[in-house]
Structures are given as structure tokens and as C-alpha cells.
Image 1 (spheres, rainbow, N blue to C red):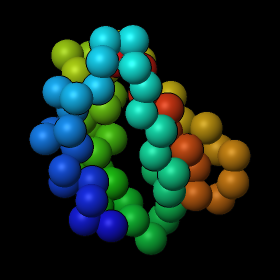
Image 2: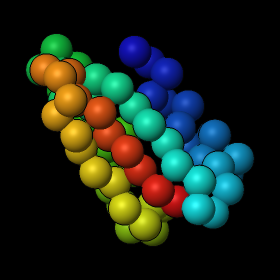
Image 3: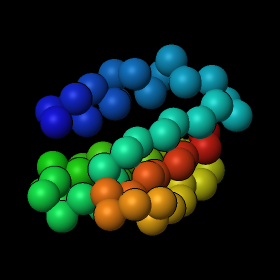
Length: 65
């Protein structure tokens, strides 16, 4: 689950208009680990929009750059 920490490094590789999809965005077992990721993708300086979909008990975050 530590792969969330690489997002800032990969961010520049995501094209404008590109999107990022992350499963387990609302999994109660990973709340602490997901917090920095969710703060990053929900920051309007990084992504235009980021939406949480409760497709299952773990959630799916879809972010548009």
C-alpha cells in the first residue's frame, strides 16, 4: 500500500486531460495511508476534479488532470 507515495513522482507523467483511477480509496483499513493520496488528488492545483465512487465497500477514486 505504500505505492501511494509515488504519486507526486508520477504526477508529471499524467497528461493534461488524463485521468487516474485508484481502488480502495475508502477502504476503512487504509484510511491513514490513503489520506495523503486523497489530499493530493482532491487539490484543485493538481487535478481539476476527483470523485469517489462507492462501487463496492472499498471505493474507487477517479481523478481528472
